[in-house]
Length: 397
Image (cartoon, rainbow, N blue to C red; front, top):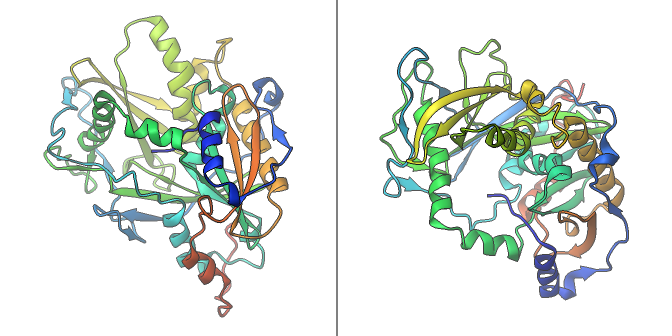
């Protein structure tokens, strides 16, 4: 779903739009983990500002209608034995990945709620607005060895917006996705169907269609170092029996992985997959990841809960493992780099941050298409001189 990039692909993309490319910027940012091994930076506990839902036609609704409820099988019964291939491809409606949504859904939520969030002049002007998935990618960068990325950045009314770019290389990879990988993607969504109900205390109904247009998204605020963050991410389900009913502490992330039978397989799992699970859940404050382990026939044979705050313990003594401090320090360094680089307030001016494993993060500057991502309706609405809304406590206090 999220784009990847290679340097060769970047060259093709920039060559395709030479008239809109401005002179290349010299600064760059190293991703060497050794540079970011200091103390863990300040990260404010994330709090939920609101939510929105996307329906089966991918239409936006400013409510929680798409929220599902965690409903695992009894722990004292037989193994789950979920058939993840059931319904594929007949009862599968995948999202149209040709539609590039950018930040549009989050921007609509922000536009609808800017009045309620107002706590004085300038609070939004100091923030960074993006998707949780983009921040996840930054956290894992110091340890990523295969897939690069590109992030477009634009400053508007003081706020820094970050939106990922799909490049020709990433697009080619997506269009050439092999049948097995497409089926594995379906299996992940099917697992959610087996584990979630439509109402608290309800039972899952795995007989229905798997429609990946449907999504429930939480909108959160936090702060990394000196940088206020407003970001949104998809939530799999809520546990109504969780110790805390306050979001995001009641949310649960659901994952699948292949069964493992050797120490080497587990070690690789902890080094690579668990890093991504940790980054994805730590950022929004989701306390637990529930994993279903599948056999070669596509059946879930066992479930295991991984508390987010305990994941690092699996690699703490592994010389080739990952370190949360490195991840967060690099993310903070990138945000500082982006804030100091993108200084001109102009929604049509885009700074494109590009990275490939083994290289530093570099920047190029572009104007307008194809990189501009803040929609006209958002820019115009935010630019209007609207009456001052009622004063409410600042969400940043």
